[in-house]
Image (tube, rainbow, N blue to C red; front, top):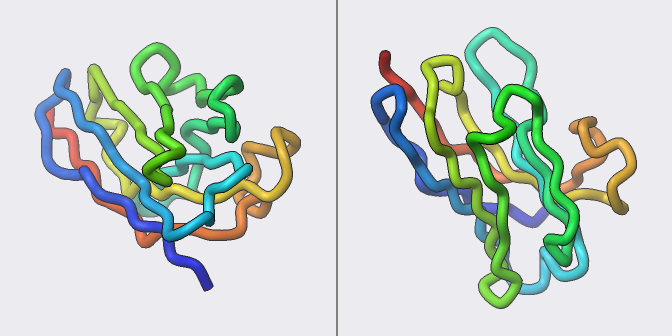
Length: 125
């Protein structure tokens, strides 16, 4: 089982910024899209953002649109999530995951095969 590795989480004040990274071993991300999800205590894990292999196609949850930016560096096998104008409701554990197939069903967790262990993001008011 391949393990993705998220990093970059932490504690930040409302209005602040964080950049999360998701690193994959070897050619895990080669030719594959990647998504970010998050899970707050007591809630379901929810979709945050998606990026295609070429980075030509991106999608965002309405709740983060205009504040978060997903990007990738394929030479480094790494996907990023730049989070600006953070709000207390963004507090969650953030996970990255490798997409199975292309853009179909991208909001569904079951459409992703490999996941990371998560990184905690806490936004104080």
